[in-house]
Image (cartoon, rainbow, N blue to C red):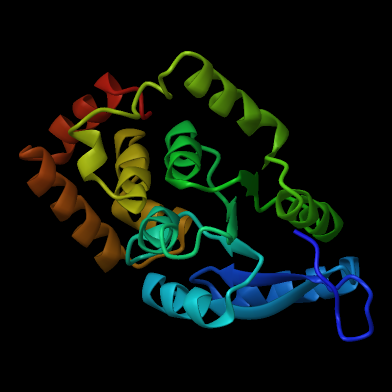
Length: 226
């Protein structure tokens, strides 16, 4: 993906940043600005709806895509824009290194997946590589993808019809719940409110048709989410 600027030289790769934490978006902008002048952040969004509208408006080269957001996350953004914007490249940037998250967004059309421990220079390099057509993964995550697609299966939990009913954030809450975390601890771990945790748990109970957290814990353990 190479084009020129008004002076005839190669223009920067135009990046659109999607993450529901404004402070994190500010940090990424600053890191990329100081890392490589071949990368330029042209816009940002904090929700799925904003992302869909912004991608349509800016037509970026690369979208840096958060996996977990309150209104559906990266998988929902991919679902809503991939068909209408086939030339846009998506690179997932997430705190999560769970196998099911990686496989879900790659199957949705993302070209790579890196975690938020990445440095600014490494992130700029990853952006340039996916813009050039290469897949990019944080080292530990590449194995998930290779295993999933070489065997025609994903991590144990992917492809489970019941588990597929849950959003990525609901899976995060369920995973911590099954590990014995209290609601307050889950809220702190995921940077959400206790009320939001309660809402997610209620939704999971409804979708799984289970009665309490102990049944949920067994259900999650059976699917190797813990």
